[in-house]
Image 1 (cartoon, rainbow, N blue to C red):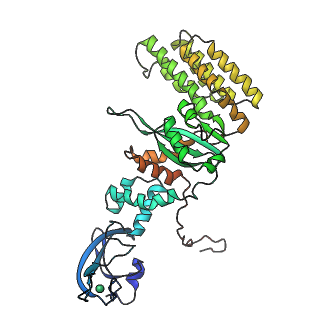
Image 2 (cartoon, rainbow, N blue to C red):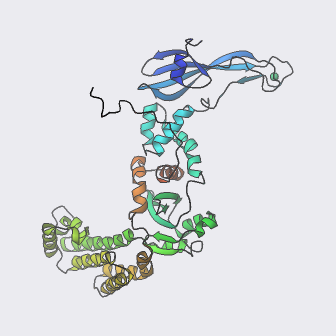
Image 3 (tube, rainbow, N blue to C red):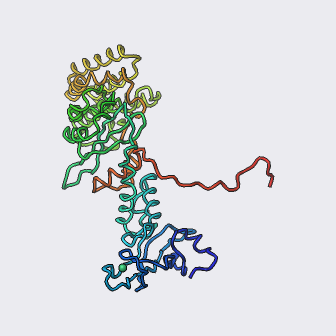
Length: 434
Ligand SMILES: [Zn+2]
């Protein structure tokens, strides 16, 4: 029976249950039973007879700083009607299910912590005293409906398509990539697709609502041929833009490649701490206008010592000429600057720089389209910035579906169920002098 005052039940807060006993060990063990003492047979309606009891243990939310184990003294009922086929059955309910290790409210909270706050599954599991799988199952059960909710993604005008690594390379396999689709205006991840090929992207656009796709005016991508191909035919109507962040990165990568090669050729080994070019690698990559006099001098000195044929200098100039395109005011100026950069690269003796020029020429229309649409001005680092936290806490995802779910829960603009917030205590009042 209960304590007669309902105090224990008020603390428990589970409708339909009463508290039989509480024991304190390293956790709080709360013995409960259902308040439904009179039950009719679900088959024939005759009043059922209590048959036997069995204890079912589940984890609930922590109480006053202590982990909680609920022990539900479950009843088994028997139908007394000899002709009834129901025979015996066990009581069950939605908030505490014998098929699950967590109560419903604990599962919802675990999902919120992992999804909304991007907390590692393992830390929740440790905190609750359950397995990793139990927490991940709760995230799937309560999170999937939020992610699949059709109202999560509204109309999108500017779509970003970006690649992210899903599994790092190991001796057994090379890096596994995923393609992310981002709403560049609302800054939410719309979806994640396994793989980064044209076919992977096209499969997604083919499945998407065609009317919704029709509303997309601009698509910003990195300079990947696979994406350009994969957007066809379903997004042929949209204006293609090369994402500025990725355009600049192509210049940075070219510079890095040349620096490494020159380093190797002049010193016969890969970059070491004391090598002149290795020491200025970060200065080379920062924007020229962001270097102070000292940085500027250090960079020039490093080049004089480590770059005898001015190859790294050439790559640095090429990189800066790419960045200049985005300093331009208006399309005409950008066009002049980009064509200068392309011509400069094409005339260079260094192969890596010529290759950069080819890439720029190949993406000329998309690069310049940025100046017409202003697309992706803000979220320059796009997807990777949004999913960084999820990836950091995931310690290498194995399962793509789990990865997708957690990225979308964290960065997909999910509407979380309302949680009532209590009033604030001890509000500082200007009139109190206590
Ligand atoms: Zn019956």
